Image 1 (cartoon, helix red, strand yellow):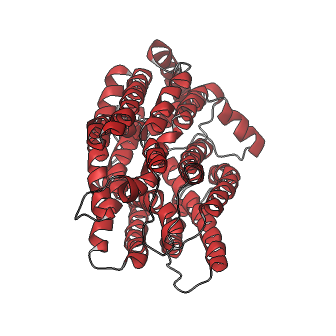
Image 2: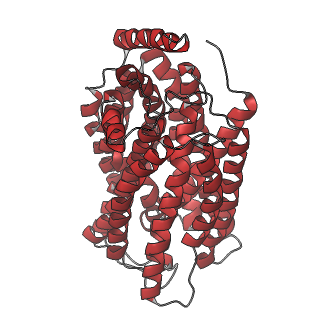
Length: 458
């Protein structure tokens, strides 16, 4: 099939992925710790904030998807929002990590709530169109899947960069200002990346020009059964999102290496898990091209479930025994980072075959919502776990408190057995994923005939 995407355009998507995932990485890895240990905001309030923000996102993402699908400008449907979002992401990311030195606890709580909700809206405004943009970058389904995998692969590397940044910034900036400095650095990169994507990307095809009622758009998207199973798979495995926000607590309170600060220990921990994750990211596209999405999902789920559960019990004997199994579990993490995106992109062909419409904006907004739901599980789950496990909050910014043995064990479960059980639970929706093999080939063949008929005016 004909190729449409140039190397320059593909590189622009890669740069945007690095920026997007760096912002996600800095918030997933450090925001919870920043709120509780730097701003000294009660973890119970942080948990309520995460719940409220996620409820708003539940409406925010689909609304953005509908807006995108009903947009028609000289720049296309998606690109104008990528341009606007590039500036908003810079401002909201920096504001989110302001240290608020000398402010009262009440002011900090209000400021954190407002800034976090606005940040989430800015991220939605940028991420939903950016993901949808890839679905109209090429009519070649193989090239589209390759682009989506490339985006996630490169982006996953970007999500790990903030870990290295923490160690660097901690070496010359006081603890309470480290995260603010990082947010400026990450915000500038992200803003630049989206500007480059806006300049170099193209929207090459669309399946409709007339406006469709919002209710009909949502109803049509819900007929996309392959997408629904892919999203349910991701949601049932959502406990894996506990690992990033909990990792800094593990580096601070669970793993103690004399002479190393928490940032260095966190970097070592991320190297342990990240090496496996990066292997999973690289191997997954190869696996699903040979085995299909369903078989790849099953292998990843079993790998993550078994290895992370084993890591928990071995870690109770000696923390170092758990590390190789956490690396193996990282392979599943990397695989699940990649799989939902090409699976949703692939499902648009099914939806077009079923309804005549692709609904890129709505479908990718649902995917974005699921990603935010998973992040919410990470943040809210961690907040609840801190209370449940009896976490003792610090009395001063950047000064770790002493934790009980049961609290330490509970914190360790957040990065091992609990995500492992999530992987095993995700096997249920995987069993109902049917868009593969002979059935998929039949649908794509019929769709090609329909497209040709439309082009010929039949």
